[in-house]
Image 1: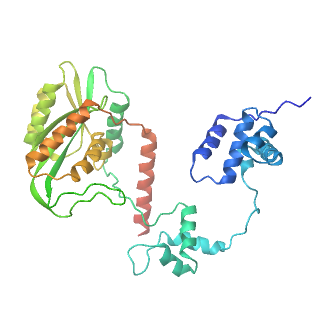
Image 2 (image 1 turned 120 degrees about the horizontal axis):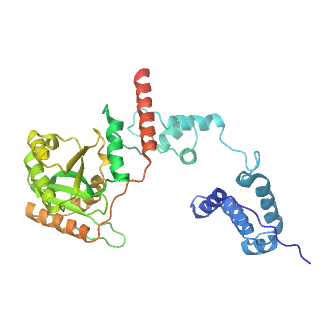
Image 3 (image 1 turned 90 degrees about the vertical axis):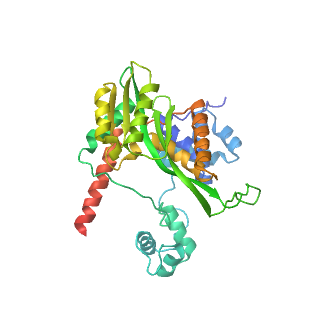
Length: 360
């Protein structure tokens, strides 16, 4: 009589990690095999059955089953000293890693070939070392750290609206996208074809600009919008009046906007003082990423940039069509990041900048 198969017991986080390895594109074949062995054994399959299903030996299944029982996920890693010895000295590897953050003499951007000449190894080896250490000297990002002394207070004021909106109210993320240019390409664009990218001419004729005012409901993603030729406090006030007309009576209106001067003009303040249901929430300076309507603008921009418009009126009609299309099937942009994590990241950045200024 055959012994019953011993089922491996997995903790939830262990199963999650093993299944992640199965989905990951960079998981090696040996790590894939070990993950599959453990997952199949956790389903109660015998060692012989697992070996047949994975086209391997019972000895291999037994080895990794026992290693996992003794040491968990750590037991699936190769033991130190096994495998091929590295051909590049550790000192050279450290030098390649350090040079990734150093400027390259005589060139604007550090490359694998420049670094390879400096340290005396192949550019393919430099690329591999950078890839293994998740270093990307050829890429960069921009950032702007807010210097607002009331950053934390304003941050929680806005995030609190997103996470727990007041009852009988609507939260509107408002901003203007100014200076949208009506550009007419000098020649027709060529469509996408197999083996050829979609193309358009680099030169164009200008036909004026327009400004889009938009208020996006945080709850359902619907837009209240207005097109204007300018974006002074006069146009902003018109937009606020439009919001007042379109939002049903009985609802308080919480407006999230930035610190642009037109939003705080004395005439705007005078009008808001009469409208008790309006509540203004200003994002911290240099923190437009807190305003969810900016995500909509980010999606809209490339669609407008790729177009060709013979007049400002034609551009306005195109924008109106796109906004109407959005409102037919609106999708809200939801805040999912934990506020404490965001503040902690900002505090680390401030500390790092302060440290660099001190060293300088």
